[in-house]
Image (cartoon, rainbow over all chains, first blue to last red; front, top):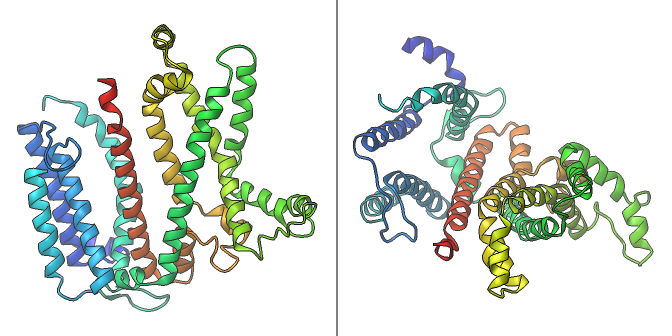
Length: 99
Length: 285
């Protein structure tokens, strides 16, 4: 099955980096879905200007993560990528907890 | 599983995975490679993104695109509301108005571009001939302002009826009792519009604004057919810029710019949706 997939999706130019990123994203979405099924999220008001559910905050976190990386790449290039990673993960955690 | 609604989503998810996920992932994977026609792809990490973000041509196309899309929204939404408000609510004139508004919507993008090209062609077009009467030298192939204004007005003509029809449907759904109550309270026409009509139109306006924003961000056929993105880069919007790169087989660059393009559309759509969903909500409660 894995061999068949590898041969028949080679035109998509998968790399382990993109596979890991998209796999992680799907795993996170699945986890959020299961979590919401077990303990449904109630919209709440934090420091963000809108009432948000856990899913909203997750979406805003992902969008923010991409935005931080794009801004960093545009300004500083691909040097010291741990800095945007630290900024975006810190924001992701804070916004997820208190947003 | 208590909620069987999930099961009904499976066919839609299966179709979505083929129509959206596979192309999207292919574009993302392309964006991480240097791919040129005939050569083996080389993994380059974020290099394509850096090249795109620092490319003055991409930045110019993005600024033009934002200027165009915001301008379109600023004109089409108020104009659509005005048209809807001025349309008759009942009687035989309703059908006539709906047909007249529907005609531009039925014309395909490429035909709209060809119509504009015929009308604006210098020396033979109707518009340059007409403007020559007031001593205005109108030439879409020569003057960037003329080309940009033509595309802008073309879009306003083509798509304002959509906003008007959405608003008209929304207006028809507002019960007269609200207006009667407002009249008894002595509300002026403006106050009735501001505090009754506009809040009740919020849901259709959300749809209208999102549709028009996303559609205007995808504008491609009209500038391509009118001027090919010129004169210079005056009407090279994002879609045209990305398509040119893809046509010249710079698939890595095209993939990276497509991803950034998609990201911008998602961010703006989300912000518009949140703004329009929450603005003025307190007034209704």
